[in-house]
Length: 137
Image 1 (cartoon, rainbow, N blue to C red):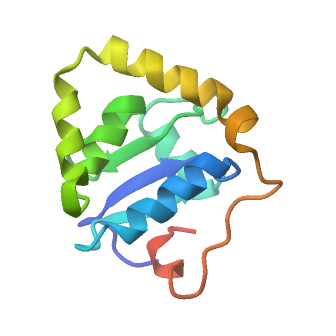
Image 2: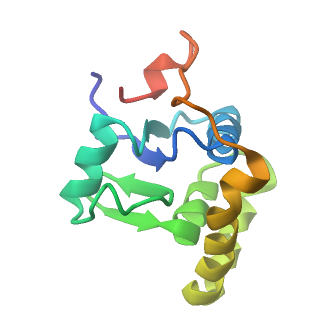
Image 3: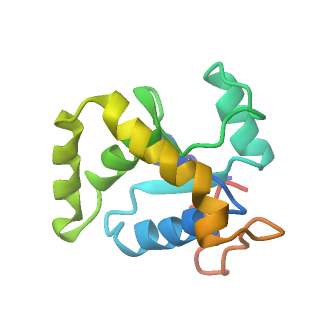
């Protein structure tokens, strides 16, 4: 596996259609090659979650890890990710001024309905050969 110390790591639900589409969107708008990805269900994802003191079985939200700096969950993770996207998407970071409780309540509403609204895969996404280097396992 390549050295990911310079890359921010996004942990996502690998069987969620909404999450997989979000990963594809991020890859498309990650012109600086900032991000690497691992599913919450993968061994790497579980290890990274445990290292931050969470139970992998209880975590079902997106997590952004900035190695050696910090980690973010839920709406804060989504907005922190937007900082590094090209185009006007970086402006979404401005929503960080909203109270985290309010942002996370909206995030939780979507997250709790994501399978019903967007569907679910039987297996985690398999990256194409050209995208494989962006995934940690």
